[in-house]
Amino acid sequence: MEFSACPSGAEYTVGQVARMSGVTVRTLHHYDDVGLLSPGGRSAAGYRLYGEADLERLQHILSYRELGFPLEEIAEILADPAQDPTAHLRRQHELLTARIARLRTMADAVERALEARKMGISLTPEERFEVFGDAPDHSAEAERRWGGTDAYRESARRTRAYTKEDWLRERAEAADWGERLAALMDSGAPADGPAAVALAHEHREHITRWFYACTSEIHRGLATLYITDPRFTATYASIRPGLAHYLHDAIRAASPPEG
Image (cartoon, rainbow, N blue to C red; front, side):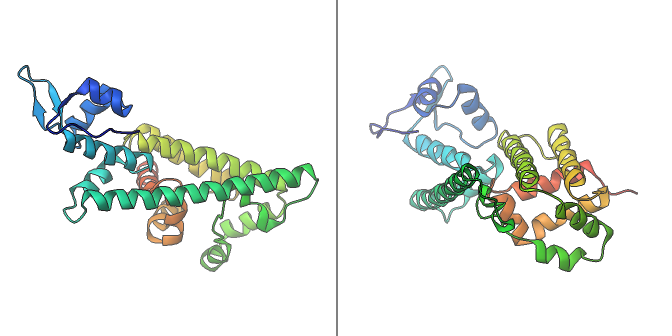
């Protein structure tokens, strides 16, 4: 998305802004309805007219959307009086640079995995997850917290028998689920809505299928962990900022406490 410098005092209709920015007229109307981007002017006939400040705000909105921020969080960021336009651009540049670096790391890991497969080389346990970048290792923390539980023992027993192909299939399923959850959050769907609840159930079923019987109570405990332990929060933030809280709320809606 690019904007050319606006002539001083120039105003643009919603259709013109849609063509320049690549977003739909419907989206611009929605941004106005929710108070995220209300055009600064109106024509004599009552049509929306966007000025230079409006276009600058739209640029920030679309940049943050591309980075995965939900609309509510974007509104809070742009409402912060301490953040001037230059600060917004600097922050967006830093976030985009970090995402590019992560994608490059993932691309390098995929390339190494492809070369290993071509040469018939088996990946080590530490290399299993390199296909998806530098995934954090929470195994020691998991053993400390749950090492004495039946769920942990069941998970350890099952995963010991997994082959490299099993691990890659499990990761592929998890990555596909994560992309769908992030896309749903991006769409503005509520975390307690039917689509998010369905993905929360799918998350629980994935754990049960691959690791241990994940009860509703365990699932709620995991949801709390995702937003209270920075390491787990960061894992989901690497997919989309705010995704850990979105998943937490979806799980709570899918598995409400009894009584």
